[in-house]
Image 1 (tube, rainbow, N blue to C red):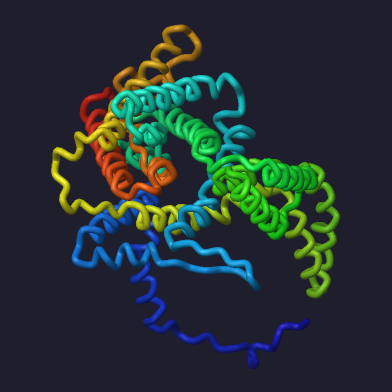
Image 2: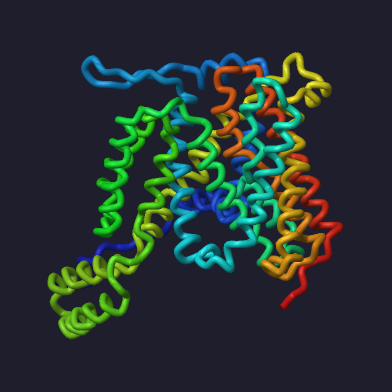
Length: 451
């Protein structure tokens, strides 16, 4: 198609002040979302907002909003749930879906792809899970609150990495990678704990159905299915069967994430070789716009085959999870009413066990297990850092928030007063770990040596 003559070409209008004002208005938002710590900051703001809301004159509105009951169904089949349950049991499935994809990415092409790279953070993660769990169990021995032993085991990746970013180059990149890998193993451990200890009783028939859905997901993986609709339908079926099978349904997200193909549909050399003819023909026939458009569309579709489905889905959902679902989860679950509480309540077994587990157990377990592995020659010091740097990172790993709150809800969901105490322990233990870890890394530990 020929381009219109200059006389008929649309005239360009001078820009109006509105777009300029709009750009100025959104500039702070763009700058915020470009920050490495933006998701952690938003998460913290939602937690603070929930705390303030739950202790304000509008506290009843907070509870009414998240305890409001919803109903969904067709014909005579209906499911009834609260807004909080929709967030915790429904939307958080997407959080675990992202966790599953991140774990697979690290195992297939990241820092955990070889045993040599994975062994030290695995050992450190074991120490960071076993010692906090034991400390909590000892403090709550003989009471019904022992069900919360897994609460202080988790490390929150967003908060912990955000805390390290505040000290900048004083921590080596290797230690940042070490903490990331450690937190991923923590997630794997937390997933196993939730599956094994926080179910509602196993139902064999439903689990067989879930196994059939998993087989379907494996088939989707083998055939490199890129379209999201089959994954969505199979994921919904897995969530439903796992829910009725007695395993917490959010773990369906992990299974789906682990099944997403992590490699390109076709080798890059093969795709580019096929396209060379089309690219040359498109260049030679530049005057034929309709033919060139079709060829460019074909080239674009073939180039998409170079991007693994894992990367595409992770890129698609990461923003929604980091800036939507997880902050919403924090808002719905961090509203701790402090009415009638005093400083002495922190010494109650449940909050004390969580605080000691996060702040003491995490750093002792990670530091002892890592240092022991280094001394035994299993691996060298992560990132070539010093012992004081490793200590600071181990303290920061005591920031447990998202998964800790999730496990607390599973352990004490039917005991609101105990759940409130557990949330208080999570907030205080995480805050202590963040502040002390920052001080150690910023003012005490030797700065990283530039290589």
